[in-house]
Structure formats: C-alpha cells, structure tokens
Image (cartoon, rainbow over all chains, first blue to last red; front, side, top):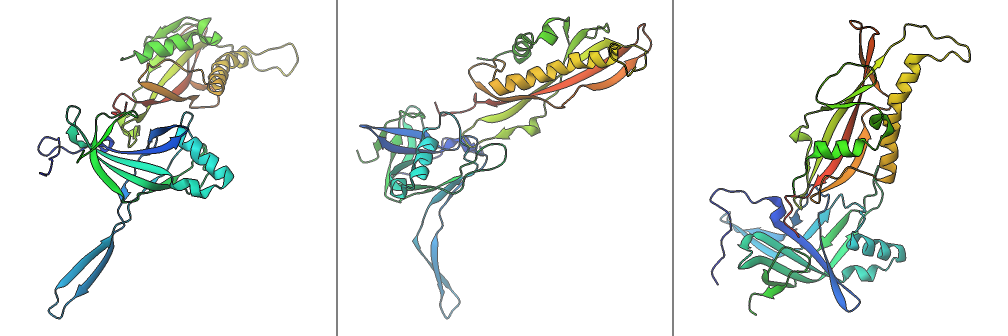
Length: 172
Length: 160
C-alpha cells in the first residue's frame, strides 16, 4: 500500500493538536472514550527503543532495534470536573486495584494524515496500561499519568475527530 | 460564536452593588466623585498557555478606576468621628470582596460556548491609590482595582 502523504502544504508545520491520544475502556455493556491532554502543555510519545550496536573489525557499526516500548506521560494531568478517565483512575487508586490498569485500548490518531472525507490515520493498541504516578501539587490537584502502549497494533482510520468516532481497520 | 467580552464583563459587573449604584463609564474619564471607569487593558499574547489538545489558557484583564472626593480632615481617634477617606476606600474594597465571593461560588461572566472561565480575581488585596487630583474642588482621590479573568479558549480545538 502506498504511503499516504501528510495533509499539509509544503513546509507547513503540523500543529500539536493534530496528534491525538484517546483512551477507551469498557463500562457496563458499552465502552467509554476520552481524549488525553486536557490542560497538558507538553506531551510526547516516547518509543524507548531497545538498541544493540556492534562494530566489526573494519569499524562499521551494525545496529539492531530489538523492540520499542512506547510510553506517553501526561503531566500535569489535573483532576478536572467531567473527566471520566480521571474518575476511573482515582477509583482504581482508592481500591489499589492495580490489575484494572491494563484494561485500556488506546488510539493514536495522526490527524495530519487523511481528512474528514477519507478518514484520519490511526493506530489502535489493545491491552494498554495506564498508571497514575503521583497525586497532589500546589493550587490544584495534579494526578499525572503514564500510558504504556502495548504495540498490539491495528492500523486504520477514524471517520471523525470526536469521542464517537468509528475505527475502520485498513484491511477491513 | 464570538462574544463581546467587554460587554459580557459589564453585564457581569453590574451585579455588584458597588458598580450598580454608581455611574460606570467605558474607556472614558468623567472625573466626578463616585464615578467608575471601566478601563480595558492589553492582554499579552505571550502569557497564553497552549495545551496539546488545541485549547489555550488566556487572560482578560481590565481595571476599574473610581473617583472619590477627599476630606482634608485628620483622623480623629474618637468614636463617632468617621473619616470620609477611610470609609470611601471601604466602598472600593467591597468590589474586591465581591469578586472573591464570585470566585468562591464560581459565578463568572458569560464568554460564550467556546470559552470556559477558569478563575476571576483581583490582582491586589486592596484598592490602589493612583493619585489625588488637587485641581478640582473638592479634591478627588483616584483609586483603581485591576481584575484578571483566566479562561480556556476552546475555539481552536479540533476534537468534538
């Protein structure tokens, strides 16, 4: 399949808001989604590559990338009214129900690839873990979290940029 | 929908007795006792905080300037001898106290559906005396209170 080009004019920088991380989890008979990053100024997906480099007797380097362990931190992640994920994580924290932290499906949506008519490129990671790292702060309660992506990836597209998007796998 | 924030703030401020009970002028000086001036301030773009979801934390600041006639009577440390200058400043303090009360109950101006007010506060605990105009009779004291509204502008968010 041909590589789909960025939906940007030549030289145009992609705004940060075009890289979207969405959490999804089961609740009752349905599922709930929430975009991450509200009131977070800076957050990146760190791929944490596991690299092994050897050098032969001619001085040539050979680098093997064994795996990546993608992770994204959200700090601050404020306790905000209306945050369903924040409320869920706080409930898990109170019960120390750690096994419930790996129930998440994560979507990474690259809205600079595709558009509203063809859909936006997305990756679905199943079986992801979200951890809470601390709780407190100064004027407002901060509850920073880290997302650990599973790399159990299905690539596809989402039809719109809203909680009720439909994800369609590429080979569907 | 774009909302005139100046009008929204005026509509909000007139709920305050200290503002409602005195003439309020907008960016216009009428130097008479017990008049209030709503003075718009510039809001520096560089103070905006941009979030990864496209929302932006912005500030809207303005100043209420109040003129009060002054008395040239020294303070008398006896009951029943109120000092006009000291009681005047309490009138202005009531605006500051009102703003604090609104913050506690989260009663904010309506900046429209694209904006969520985060907080409202005065930038000082008490009124600032900017000067005394001694070219008029009676002399006029010029007090001011600056008020800062922090709000989230969601108009550039792309997530519905």
